[in-house]
Length: 419
Image (cartoon, rainbow, N blue to C red; front, side, top):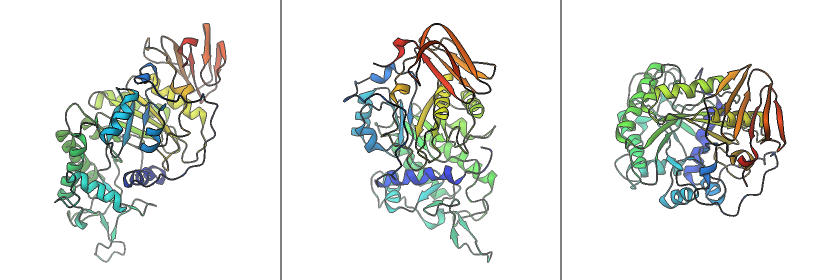
């Protein structure tokens, strides 16, 4: 990333803590939605196989996900799924990838969150030998008297606290947590939140390590933790991380990962279109197969959908073969499904791509067997077809369309629309 994480970025931590503790997710204002078709009463197992968009759900609100049977995702992520939950999710599409996980550099103050972390790390025993101790926390000398007197919180977030990734006992605990999640049969791998190139607490130190942390030590320590994770997680299971805006060029983190998520893509602090595409292409070179990148678009926590941003993020995910699209409210409700499922976009069947994407006249374009995807990044785009196509956004059928600069279009042959 180009700088420290913002308050909006860090708010995802709070949402995750709420999910883990089993507390109801924060309420959100009902979004202004374009007209949608009525959801089906029950999804057909394997129905997702005909969808062209590869869809992800970040920090899933499991109650909503399990209740909304028409919401079929290719990749779902939350703190934990039990076997019955994973079975129900996969009954809609057997190929859905299910990931569990929390953190490597912070903990929540919430007692339920802490108990969950420790219980899983100890294989089900909350009183086991792996416990969180004061020595693990990054501390600050707030008054300059030479005494560590305050635990370090990311700015504006008093309910989460940074851990020292160099501390050996913290590493043992968090490694045990991820190993236990990864080896359960219901999880196809793990997700690690807030893998960050910039320290939350530059200059902080802990009882476990007596030297202050800086950017170099912060990166080195996380590099070592991710290497430990990779060595203990089954080779056929995924290890992906929330990279936020992006990992800097030359970051050591991707070599341990199967991919990463770009939170707030196209948003107030997230990666731009060009940065996101470059990151996804870089993932092909720097991560382990399958080189996953999730373009996670949200409403900047407003609840008001910027449809041009939505379409651009979805279209960007279709320009490449290794990418997924996630869309949600924002940090206060990343994993909501109610009011955030859009079948007119998600259920289109473009068929297989006939080539990679091209860039001409400021517009990105990719052709599929049954449709065309266009992102008008630098200029308005005009499309003319030999046969009638349907504009997924409007439902209009025509043989020519205009896409304004800053927007994107998905155009399909009539047989590419969902029933």
